[in-house]
Amino acid sequence: MSNDNHERLLREGISLSVFSELGFEFASKTNIVHKMSQITPSGGTAFRTASIESTNLLLQLAVVIRRLGGYSNWNYVNIILTDGEDTSSTHTEYELTQIFSTIAGSQIPFKIWIIGVGISNEYAINLGRIASYGGDKVEFLRVNDVNIAEVFEKIKVSVGIIERQRQAVVAGQNFVISAQTQEIDPVLLLERPQYAVFFTLDCSGSMTTNNRYLTSKNAVARFINALNQFDLVGGCLFNTQTYLLVNRAISQPQQQQTQQQQVTTTYYVTNSQTQTNQCQRCCLGFVIFIIVFIIFYFIARSS
Image (cartoon, rainbow, N blue to C red; front, side, top):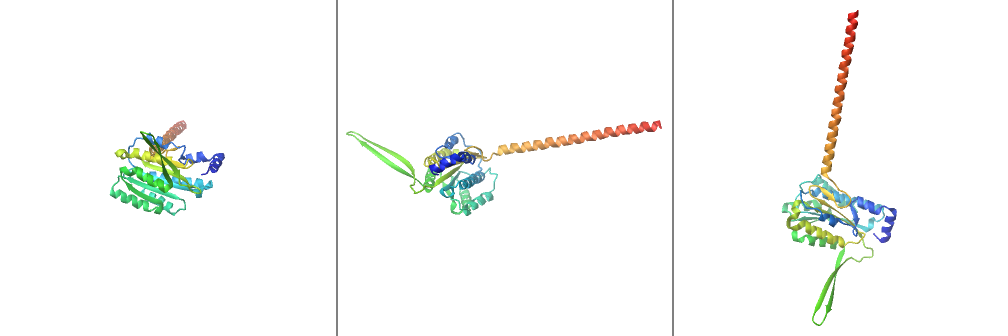
């Protein structure tokens, strides 16, 4: 998004609020890495649910950006990382393959990477098969613990970011000082595309193995630092449930369960009240019957 487009969106008062509502913020403003630091990995794995929800958010974002006139200049990236089989999803494998099929058939410049860290051969085959439904828009990468940072770099290159090294040497009579710096720049194009990047990251208990979670967090930080300031960034963590890192939670089964309990309680109270009303009507009818019976009894005796 050019500065002119950014200023136009701000004037219309829809940019930041709409993006935030969908779970995105500008790369220069995001604090999702800090939020990741506040999470301790634990629990199970809701891989399918998190993958579906995050992909849906990117699709919704694409619709919004298209309405804002920036459709042709945007690329949408979802990086999904997991280290174990799904144990907690509320969505089926069929639902996940269907959304990948939708992505494959769309004209949206979409790319999804599924990264399997330290997973079994059987599960790797399963994830590869699921990814195949997305055609060339969904790619499965199997890595070990030491390759997490490397695979993020590979994806970053695919996004279009290069790193440049500069070296300065200061020499004196008895010393030589060498300093090396890195600059991260977008690939120089006539009109650089904008990127909306979403990180869908496993934070289950097994992610503590060999510092997988910490390594992933550092890789995300480096990736974000390489983006343009007006690129969009979003993310969610998933274990037994999913947590959106910007603005709100994607889905919270505990809250849903509480709502179900409230519905059950309401039904129970309503049903109890109905039963009470029925008892009251029966009692009233019985009293009226006794009164009528007494009246007729005295009329009969008097006659």
